[in-house]
Length: 423
Image (cartoon, rainbow, N blue to C red; front, side, top):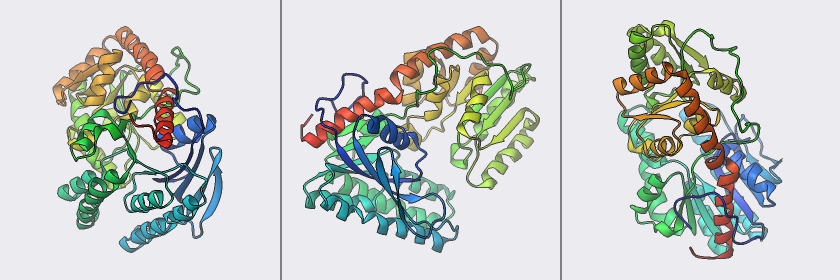
C-alpha cells in the first residue's frame, strides 16, 4: 500500500498507536499537517500523540502543555535576529529534543517520528534502536535543496551558512537518516520518486499530500455578498507567501496583460513576506509596470478573513515558479481555492496538473505570462463557466483532499508500521 495514496478502506490493525513526534513546527503548531491531521483527526480516533516543539514566542524556560489529547514539551526560544542569537535558538532546540531519550526509555510509545529536522533525527534513530521501537521520518519539503538554492541565488541573509547547512543536511538526510528509518512519509508522488532516486526503497516511502480542514465547509456553494471586494470589478486573487523566491513579479507582469484587455480588473495579493523588503520589491515592481493602482496588497490576514477574500474573488491563481524545489510540492492554496468553490488558473506542475485534470476546476497552462493572462481572461468573461468549475473543484477537494480521507491513509500506514507488517 505504500506509494500513491487513496482515502478509504480503514486501518488493517485496530489498536491505537502511541507516537512521540518531533517537528520543525513551533508551538502552537500552525501547519495543518500537524495541527489538523495529528492534533485533531488522528487524536480523535484514540491515538496518543505527544510532541516536542520549540516555542514560537520568545520564551526563557521550557514548559509542558496539553495538546490534541496528548501533551507537548515546549522548548525555550530566543527570537533575536542576529546570527549569534539565531544559533542560540537552534542549539536550544537541539538540546531540548534530547528529551526524547528519556521519553522513549519510559516504554510509553510505539514509535518516534521526526518531521523536517535533521540533527534531532539522529537522536531519534539511535533511541529507536536502543529501545526497540519504530523510527519514522516525515519529509514535507526538500529543505537541503532549498538551502542550497538560496545560497546559490544569494537570496539568503547568510549565503555561506545556508550552503554549509544545505550540504550537511543533504548528507545526513539521504545517507544516514532515511536509510535508518523504518518508514518515510513524503509530500507527493514526485517527491517519492526523487527520494527513491537517492537510494531509498520505494516500498518504505508513502506520499501524503497537503489537505484542507473540512469542518465548517458546507457541501454546496455558499452565497457570497461582496463586502471586501467591490461588486463591480472583475477580481483575480493570489493567496500565499510574497517571499522573493515565489517570484510573484511574474503575476504582476501577467496582470499587466490582463489590464490591457480588461482595464477595470483588480489583482488581490493576500499574504505577506517575512522580510518587508521583499514585499516592497513587489510594490516597486507594480509601480514600474504601471499596475499599482489595480493591485491590492492586503497584508497577512487571519485565515477567516483571508478566506473571505477568496470567496468573493472571481478567479484564483496559483503560479508556481518552475524549479525542482516546487515540483515536489502539493500546494495547499490550490486545494483551499477548490474547497471554497473557486475556479482556478495554475501553471503546469505535477500536483496542480493532476488536481485540475481530475476535478475540472479550471485551467492548467504553461508558466508563461500570455498563456496565464488568457486563461484568467477566459474565466473573467465567462462567470457561469467559472461557477461550474468552482463547484466541480469543491466536490473533489472535500472528497479527496479533506483531512478525514488523508487521516485514513496515515492511520492505516502507521498501524502497519507499528505492527511490523511489511507492504
